Structures are given as C-alpha cells and as structure tokens.
Length: 160
Length: 191
Image 1 (tube, chains in turn cyan, brown):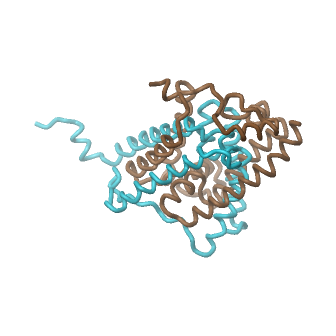
Image 2 (image 1 turned 30 degrees about the vertical axis):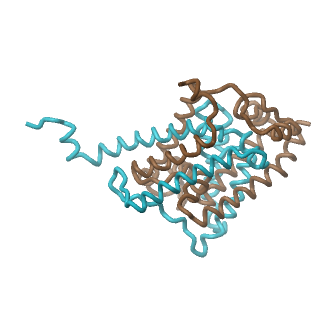
Image 3 (image 1 turned 120 degrees about the vertical axis):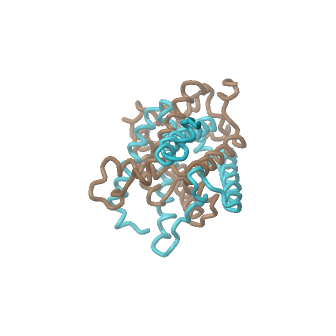
C-alpha cells in the first residue's frame, strides 16, 4: 500500500502547491539578494559617488562579475535547453528594438541616471535599505512610486 | 562565521552572488531578474485608475516580482539584525576628500546623515537628493524599461543592445548629477 502523502500530492495537485512553494522560493531568493546588496555596500550612497567619480574599482568589479557569471549561466542553460522547475525551457525575452522603441532607452536612461546620481540608490537598494531601517529610503521609494505613476500619465506623450 | 559575514564582502564575492540570484530565478520559474517592474506592479495593484499602462493582471505577471522585492526588504531586516558592520564604507580616500569638501562626512553608516536621513528631508539638499532623486529613479526606470538590475545585469548578460544604450544613459545622467547638480545643491546649503 502506498499511503505516502507526498507521493500523492506530487501527481495530483502539482500546480497549486508548486505556486505557493515557488512564491516562498522568490521570497528566499529576494532575501539572499538583499543581503548581497547590503554586504557589498552597493546600496551605499558613498559607493555610488565613488563610482560616478571614477575613483574606485569596487562597483565596476561588482557589476562586471555579476554580468559575467549571469551571461555564462544563461549561455550554458540555453545551450543545454535547461528547464526550470516549472518545466519551461529557460529563456530571457529580448528587449524591444523596433522603430518607436529605441529612444526610450537613452532618454529614460539619462533620467534614471540623474536620479541615481542624486539619491545614490536604485530600486533594489531602496528596498534593501528600507528593511535595514533607513527611514529616508522609504521616502525615496514612495517618490519612485510617484515617479512611475507620473510616467504612466505622460507615457503616451513621451518619445519612445 | 557571523563575524566573517558581517564584514563588507569584496566585489569578487558579491558580484558572482548576483549571478547566483539570476540563476536561481531562472531555475525556479524561468523568471527574468529585474527590480523596477515591481514599482509598476505596486501602482497597478493600488491606484491603477483608467491608465492602460497600469491596468493589467498584476497577479498573473507581477506577483512573483512583488514577493521577490518583499524578500529584498526581508534581507535588509536580516542584515540589520545580525550582519551589520559599524565601520564607514571603505570608499577611496579621494572620494572621502571630495565629499568632505562638499560638507558630506563618511563617518560610519551606509548613507550620509547630512542629506539621506529623515531629519534632513526638510532641508533643500535632503529633499532634492531623496525626493527628487527617488522620483527620477522611478520615472526613468519605467521609461527606459529597466533599472540597474534589469538592464545593467540581466540585459547585458543576455547581450541586449537596448540595455547597453540604457546603461550609457544611466552614466550620462549620473555624471551630470554627480559633477554638476550635487555641487550646486550641496554648495548652496552646507557651506
């Protein structure tokens, strides 16, 4: 007699149980990433100043090794036709690059950069600092949300 | 163990760990690493109005991302409780001197109290840095379709030309803020 409940649930209610388990997984991966952001001190306004003044290698080393390891893993996954736990073939969508979708990158990029240079925090660090107990990060995050809301209002009229 | 982890981590450790984050998201649910879309999902979940940009099924496309950023907050809590280090951020001496000339001291803590704190929000410099800076980060990230994580890490790792263009933009903006705007903002109030 196979009364093993885990065996039964594996076959029958795969989707519902998998999704709540996977949400717990995203929470864990997020926590891991938050710790990495804080312990690398990439969340620090000082670090970002050092970067934009070209006076230290830290942020460049961090971003380059981050990109390199990600690129390597992605290339290997694509080559092997790796599947995720959900059974999908691992793939990362292309960013749109047709006419009408080209100007947004440098225009939006410059606006983002102006903010990054002032606040010294991009969205990931805002969340991490909020948890760390930096009250002003909550204000920065709220301001970023207002920024998104205003972007949504103006999006039709902005060049993209 | 905790003591070692509490020290700041070198870039050659932390950088590959960002790659590990990207890998785990791909493996768990074929999810593309990115943080700033969560801001759009928060707006869609709270005050979408009639806006086509904010009226979509955020539970379907964005729930995982919202839980992911909630995790980042949680990681911040964990670090604050058990892994924080009291030393000032180990930035270059030249940066310390440049910032001191602008009235910003690197005397412990991740953020400069003079501008990036709740008390400083009422000063013009603190308001501009935190509120205006935060606003531009949100506005620009969604206009560009990604932030440091989505374009800077994931887009580049996926060899996306648009992401390279966005990063050049990030740097143009950041250089203007650092070398033109910040001296104006800080020079006017702290000296």
